[in-house]
Image (cartoon, rainbow, N blue to C red; front, side, top):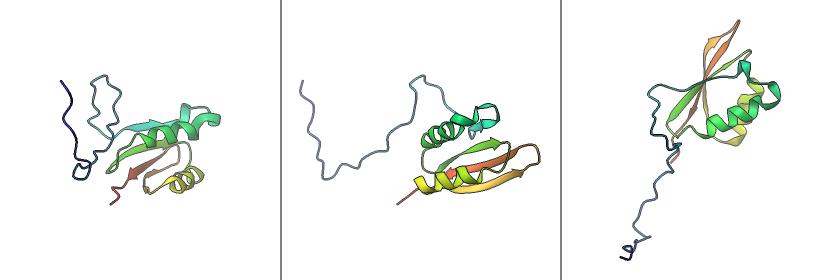
Length: 102
């Protein structure tokens, strides 16, 4: 049976779902503790994690210092809201939010 034609002029594109296909769901805000990730790959790990955050959502980053250079790199990649939740001295917790863009 042929598929029904889609009217591309009136169809609203839907955002791509960011799921792994396992059926699991995160109920809470995801937390990424980078203190145990080797420094050489730490920024890449954060970029990958933040790319998976859907607009209107956020994640919490736990780092051994306030990650100013990393935050600047994320801001260069696109809009981001940053909130320092815990300002050291042993660990910094920073909320990284991806705003909904119009």
